[in-house]
Length: 460
Image (cartoon, rainbow, N blue to C red; front, side, top):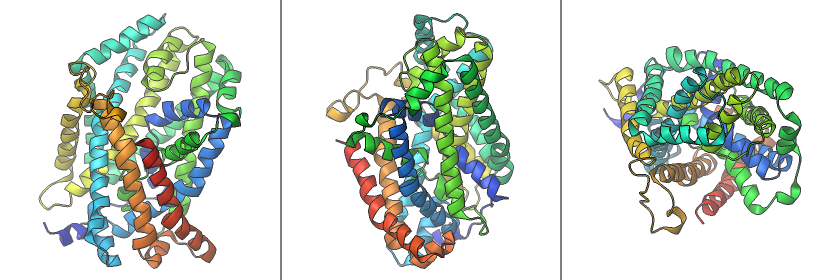
C-alpha cells in the first residue's frame, strides 16, 4: 500500500467528547500516578513540589498536549500517516515522519516491560482475593514478592494474560472496544479511589499522610527537584508517547481540544494526588516505610493490608485499582501500533492487534528474564550511568529518559516552527490573538528548551 493510500485510510471517530476524554484520561493515568508521583512529591517538598508540578502542567504540559492532539486531528491517521500528511501540508521535509515512527516505537517497547508490572497487578489481585496477606510480616511479604520474580514462567504467563486482555479490547475497535471499556472502567477507577481515600480518612493515619503530601517544605526545593517536577508533568500526561497523536486523529471537529486537554490534565493530577491520600495514611498507620516504586506497592502495602481492619477488602480494591490504571494505559499503548498496521490493505484490525500484542510480549521476555535467569546481567556495565541497570531497567530508562523527552521536544518544535500557524489555530479553535501568541512562544521557545533541560539532566 502506498504512503498516500495510508493517509486516506478512514479511522473510526470517538462518539462524543466525553468518551474521548475518558479514554485519553485512562491512557494518561498509569502506574506512575499510583506510586511514583505521591512518593516524589512527599520526599521533595510536599505542597511546594505540588505547586511547581501544577505550574508546569498549566504552563507547558497542557499547551504541548493541545499541540499533539491538534497534530493528530489534522493528520487524521496513524502517527506515521499523520506526520507524513502534516509535513507535506507544511512543505517540510518528510524526515519529520520520525515523530510518527517514535510514536510507534515508544509504546511498542514501553508496553513490553510495562506489561510485566501489569502482570504483577493481576497476580496480586488474585492473592488479595484469596486473603493471602493475612498476618503478613515484612519478611513474609518480601519472600512472596521474590518468589513471584523468581519464576520466569509465572511472570511470562501473567504478562501474556495482561497483554492479551488489552488485545481483545483493541481488536474490537475504537467504539466497540476502547470507548466501551473506558466508559465504565474510568468511572470505576475513580469510585474505587474515592472509597480508598475515605478508608484512609476514617481508618488510617490521615494526619501524617496529609502532612507528608501537603506540608510545604520550600527548603527541599533545588534545581534538580524543579526538573523532576517538570519531567513528571510531561511524562504523567503521556506527552510524546504516541497516544495523544493517535487518539487525536479520532476526535470529531466539534470537540474543543483546549478544553479536553485541560480536563485530561486535571483528572490525571487528581488521580495522582488522591492516590497519595489513599496510600500514605495506611503506610504510616502501620509504621511502615513509605519507600517508592514496586517495593511500596508489592511489599510494603500487602503488610498493611494483612494487618489492618477490613484489610482483605481494601487490598482487593487497591490491586483492582492498580490493574485498571495499568490496563487503561496499555490500551493507549496498543492503539498507535494497531492504527498504523491496519492502514495497510488486506490486514484486519483483529489480526493486527494480535500481531502487535505478540511482538510486545516477545520483546518483554528479556524484561521478564532480567528478574531471574538473567538477574546478574548488566548489558551496559561499561557506561557508568547505566552500569547497575538490568534489561528491565535499561528499557525503562531508554523510554522515560531518552525517547519520550526527545519525541515530546520534536512535537513542540514541529507545532511551533513547522506546522502553519493557521492550521494549528484552526484545530485548536483559538481566536484570541494574545492566547495565540502565548501558545506560539510556549511551543517555539519555552517547551523545547525546558524539555531539552530534562533530557540533558537525566543523562548526566
